[in-house]
Length: 322
Image 1 (cartoon, one colour):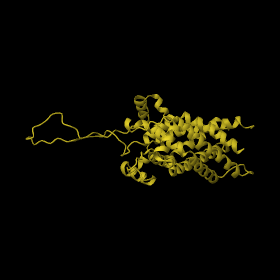
Image 2: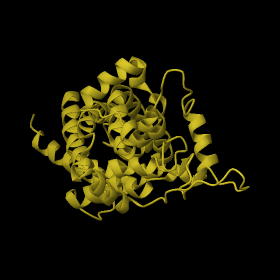
Image 3: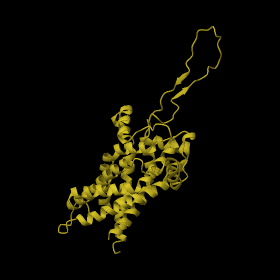
Image 4: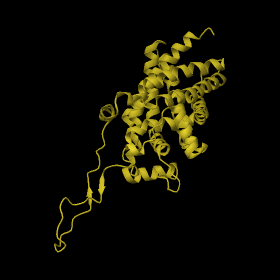
């Protein structure tokens, strides 16, 4: 019975992750906007004058030309820019890492949540208190994140690679190549970089997403607003997607930046840790920087959650007799 929950959750998660991958990629690109350590063309150093002057002339020319910082754009503009500069296929950069991440992380969290839900559900009332749902989500999210962190790091890097100058790109060929290169160049520990953030985010997302879905579904059915069908599943999914987006976006921004930072031997890393990243981000870009990418986050989280739970409910029906 417990194994079936892992299979159901895994199938639904892989389908949902693959179908919403472009939105996730755009969200990552938006969250990385404004990082001060990323190479850019905002300034051009040591420009030579186009003509020579005699040494007697007491005229000085600036050797640095400051160009206006690139304007921050919205999700639609970023999507168009990606297609124009990198090609339409770039919207699926890192798809192999997404599939591996969903297979490891989401399969674990969905299956474990189902196991805990069965154990903690009151057999008499066939219901589970909201606090217990949240607790089950926190536990299953933490375990799932620990298992899936290497794929998560690879996914973030592969999605972000296209925004870097050509000579700074990592050019991973696949998720396997990404994991191999990270292990070789930065050590095995790099596969769990940002794992604390990943675990915290996963706990918040899983608790808010799964608990709010179950709670919303129960309330809809109890009040007789809808029958137990696709309409109920879609409505409850939208509630779950919104709650999860609001709760997780700040941690997601920090997680993305910590995972994506480039660490080189003998060079101080851009961030010393999660707290340092959060402080630097807020100081340089303001507190609302923690909600960068919120529109694509909720735009992705909404469809992802709908596809996830609608697919999950259908898979449950198919596997009901097994």
